Length: 345
Image (cartoon, rainbow, N blue to C red; front, side, top):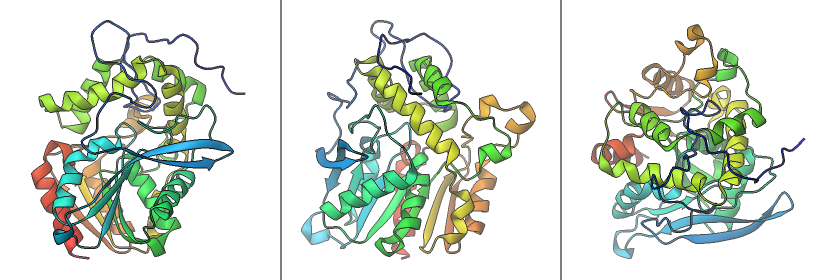
């Protein structure tokens, strides 16, 4: 039964929620962050936002996306599709978009349904298959036939699914600290219901977001520019559509936990580049597991090598001192490695 939603927000202060270790709601204490509606109005991306309108599961949807072209004189004829993580948006890719466009790539970066500036449906059967199909429909509308797909965090799972579904349209797959390099449920993490996950979403604080990002995204470092991404996340949940945002986060958390792609790595037919910050320790639902199970989870220094060995044509680049978001933490170094890996194809 669907929980009745979108009454008064329950924005109590607490530690980071357990449904998805980095889910985001800000408490409603005055002056902590700006507030945004459910489509992140008022939070500006570095590039113009366009809208793709389509029907999915009997509902009218709009997918926000960025489409940034290089100068004609420098264009290399290749298109990159960037797939954001669960606590990220198309706008979070801004430095990577700049680096790719300067190198001659056309870059398309959508906000997936349920996230950021795109539709937050009240009811939707979220799956990586569905999100991949939505993205493919966007590319069809733009008349783009061949792409390199790059996914970060949850986007790595989505990019993998896209490459498995549309190998003929995928020139190359790039994964940046993807989650889903291990099957948490199979390793002993207990399942959490969507209703319980929704309540956990409502209990997460802005400070919890910041502290989680400090320890996991940036390997216990912090720079002032990171606060912008905390504001982006927390502001949606503090706004007028906060409950709808939280509900979509609970639904997508369930998708991530119950739809592992790691078991299909051997079926990938495209060249794959893995870019891994080894200080990352992300593992969905880790806090619900026993201490013995927790000790086995999120070891990216090992997981990156395991993924490379499982994928038929994979190259691994490791960043020993970086965390979950190497493209933000060390952009110059990351983009140098990215462009070198892309140029090998």
